[in-house]
Image (cartoon, rainbow, N blue to C red; front, side, top):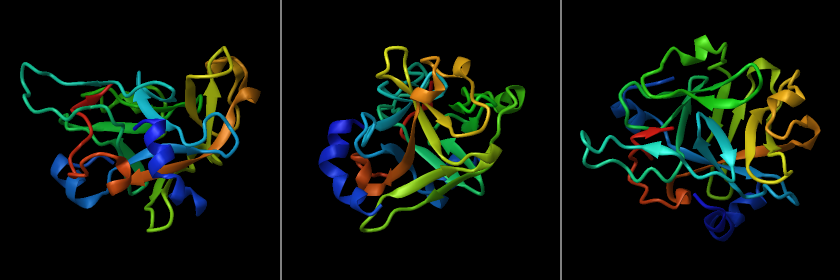
Length: 213
């Protein structure tokens, strides 16, 4: 999802402001994409994309398709998630799925394919996520309340602008943990969740990628 789509198609909504088998994920939960909401800031209405096992504003979605084995992979240009029962995952086709979790540093992260034990190995937190679906007049909201989190932060690169890495707003984030080396430069924001026809895709209910990278 690109910011241009968000600006033209989603602005009216902003005025109001664990892993499952693939078949279950398709039928039981609604996929959504994340959009940062912070009026008057450089991140407002920006898409949040998966890239390098982390989430970013200003980086494209990174995905992979094993073309030698799979002939009909999704386009892989949109970052889509699922959330339910306190957990969250990437909406990907890869067997076993990809878990969304938060590192002790606060970094919002996701597992590599076939690496279900990665959160535990990294002392990550996989619970505390919640998704409130949108309505006819408002976008949904994605939240994380684990580790005492009070929201999300977007932390800029060393030049003070893009890209911005996404963190949970927890106590104890150090300058060394953020890409620009300065926690005070991070911006708090609301993680709006666009689903269904708001996604700008064909809305066919299928995963956004074979796997995210």
